[in-house]
Length: 170
Image 1 (cartoon, one colour):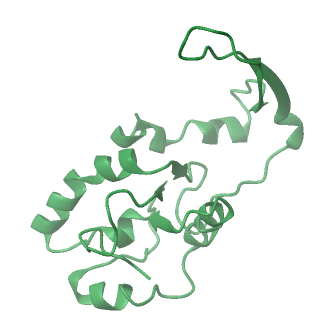
Image 2: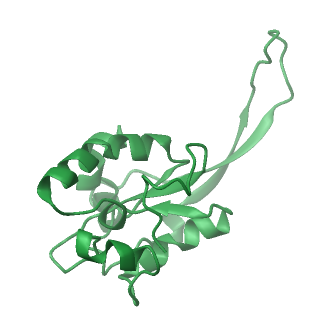
């Protein structure tokens, strides 16, 4: 179900997640004025693989809402789209986080890419944070996944996607 961002059903403080993805050359599910009322009731099934994958992440993190540009921005008429697209950076900035389907050339590929687990090695980092009064707090263990630099491997090439050059990524 689509909740139009201008709707009073969502307040400004409602947490949501955004998706940054390649639309690609294949047809994609969009919202236009003619389908807006239908989208507010349901999303056509089956959605493309990227949309199926991306709903898993907020669900696992107990986030109820997901903002998808192709569905949440009405794509016509052009003047309306231009006004909404100008607000796109705000949608990404105000989200809890953005899921980037950077490895997918289009929405048929999905968010989850096969990878060599040997290239993703867990590493425990001990971080010390100072409290507000300047006193040292106990170290905080933070688990980070570190991978070796591999400029020639296929996974690394996908890590530098054209999505990384979009304005809202900064």
